[in-house]
Image 1: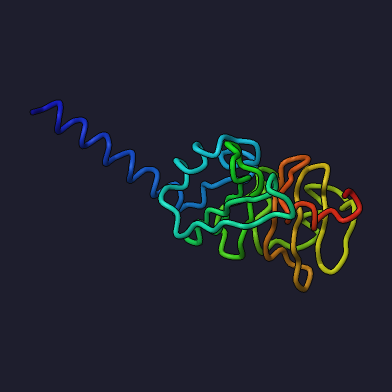
Image 2 (image 1 turned 120 degrees about the vertical axis):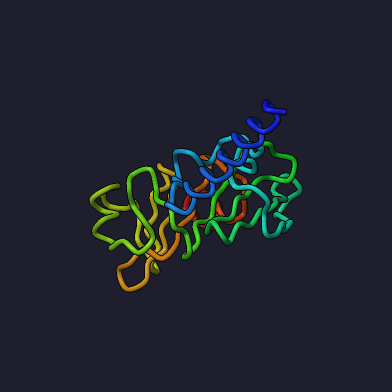
Length: 165
């Protein structure tokens, strides 16, 4: 009986710790959530998704799935038969940070300070393809972002890098 109570207490404590960690914005793109990580690990980290969408690619190998977590401010993307995270959409409501310390709402100058000059900047998109990072800006403020695995077949990745296709 004592062991059962202890096990339940430890489990509840871990759940509360995890909930508090996310409440504190402990989700870090490029650290505990990153492209290339096993999809199952990302699903365990983020918990039950709000929705799941399937997208047709330009070819069967590019069909993908988007696992949506609006409460965490992210969408995790994977190829249909893939086992790894191919891309992450960082939404305007994202409360965590990037491994560099950059956060949604930071000024464009912070991006320059942390990542250097973007490889290209057009239509309010700062592109860092060598890092797999793409930041969307509005009025010089970071409003959302995307991260893609190198060489990803996701359609969004190819659209983000029109000169590399």
